[in-house]
Length: 257
Image 1 (tube, rainbow, N blue to C red):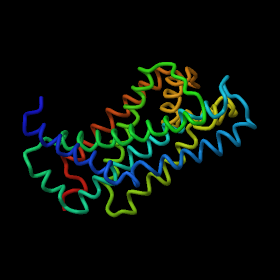
Image 2 (image 1 turned 90 degrees about the horizontal axis):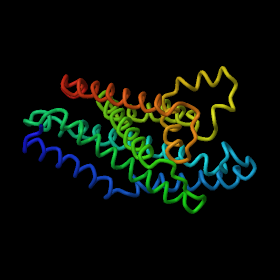
Image 3 (image 1 turned 60 degrees about the vertical axis):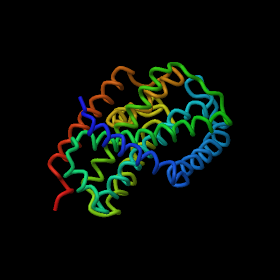
Image 4 (image 1 turned 180 degrees about the vertical axis):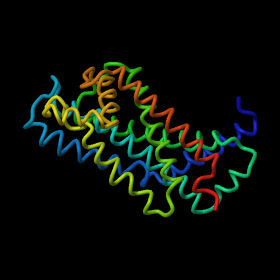
C-alpha cells in the first residue's frame, strides 16, 4: 500500500507525462493519425478493393485491428523511451532516485503515461477508421484488456530501452530494427493461414502476432491462434518485463555513474 508521499510522487510523474503528451500533440498524437489515414487509403481502399474479403470481412475491416495495435505499440513504447531517457540526459532522474520514493512508483508513473498515450492514439485511429469502414465489436472486455495489456507491455519495454540507452541514437535502434519488422510480420495485413506451414511455424515465434490476433478477436471475433494462449503470453511478458525493469531501476543500471 502506497503512503501519501508515494501517491503524490506517482501523481506528479503521471501528470507530467500526460501534460507532455497533450502539449506537444503535433509530435505525440498527430503523426499516427496522418500515417493511419494513409494506410486506410492505400491498403484499405485501393489495394483492399482488389483483394476482396478475408475471413469473411472486407479487407479494410480485417486490417483495422492490426493498424490500431501498430499505433498503440509504437506510441506506448516511444513515449516512455523518449521521456525517461530525457530524464537521464537532463540529470533530474538522480533527484527522483535519491528522494524517499519507492522505485515501483517511478516505474508505474512512466509506464502508465505510456499507456495513456497508446490508448489516446488507439482511440484516434479507431475514430479515423469510421470514415473508411464500419466498426465491429465482438467483445468489449477482450478488446479493452488487450488494449491496456499491450500498451503497458511496450511502455515497460521502452523503459528498459531507455535505461540501457547511452545516447539518442540508442533509443531508435529497437523501434527501427526490432519493433517495425515484428509488427509488419505479426499478421497486420494478412492471416498466417495464407502462409506455407514452415512460415506459419516461424510466425508463431513473433510475440506481436498474439497481441494483434487477440485484439482482432475482440473486434471481429476471428483469430489465427487461441485467445487463451494469447492472453497468457501477454500477461507473462508483462510480469517478466515489469520485474526486470524494476530490478534494473533498483540496481541503478545505466543511471548511476
